[in-house]
Image (cartoon, rainbow, N blue to C red):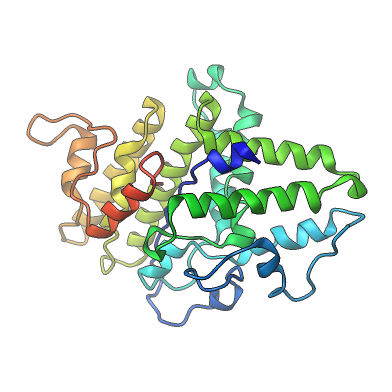
Length: 295
């Protein structure tokens, strides 16, 4: 639990562009939580659920019912841009997991790939009860870490406790989540890069779906914080694809200064890792909340 309390969780969110709409079918499925400025506890959230889990489960089924909520909890950053049917937290973690399996050589030789996949699969698991808190919600980094740490303790120790026969699996999930949060191992650092990369890919896809009517430049800044060269190169591919798309619709997108720095095309500049450039006020607030992993 102490490791979980020390961990500072990243939060960044995304935005989708299919049809922009004020009516979002995922709204009613968002993880239940009290108002963000009110006292929060796991037990308080559980009282809002239909059919709360038993105190001493005898199988992993109650845990699986809670995890199901990740399928219907939308990534809030996309909703902030009024994107209809935004991706869910589970959607995001699924593609991250696939990305870990595609790790290129020689980086692959340095990593425990199954471990990376595990980290990707569980890194946002706490959002099943906490919800996807964004920096715009006014919840401090410490408070967010507290909520997520307590949620993971509940999920992995109580819902996957001795009576379920799944305690080893619970320990595995909890330790993987803590490893990701602490971001010390090479595997954790890789998965943090994957987290950012998946966001940039999704951003570009939503812009393309919007046919030139939606510019999600705010999310580009996470690309500057990708650390591993192999992942930087994949990110460059996405940014080239994005520029080709905007050239095709005859418009100049936002964030070109960031793209040029990353692609090494701007005024002799090369990549500036970790620098937040060309950002909005919202982007600055997000960076201040968690400069370790804004993606």
